[in-house]
Length: 149
Image (tube, rainbow, N blue to C red):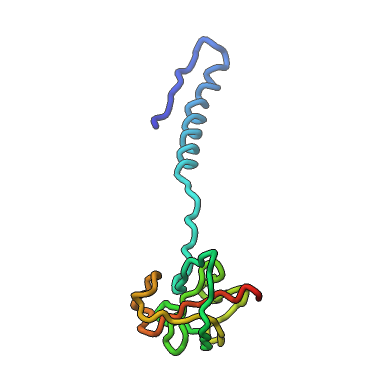
């Protein structure tokens, strides 16, 4: 935008002094409005990566297997220290990069965890993409706690 200049009115006493300020005020307003339009809200911080989840259907049922192991964060992947890769239900699990919260319980890396679930075979049977960096361990589909708990 270009500044707007206002001619000084010489026929009005005292008007010249007011009109000399007008271009400055107008330029200041234009500059301020330009700055306001340039500011943007901070982008949200990305979710910490490394946790694999799946969408939990409303009519879920749990698998009968039991996995007990120690949580580890290796190669940007939450997994067990034996290499097994858990895939948690998304609506019951959060991960902030330090603390894993599953079904209301908090776990740190190095904590022992006991989960229900099971392995479906190979990676190809899991709809959640498993990054190669997570390793080649068994994929464990973590079941939600029983509905009676």
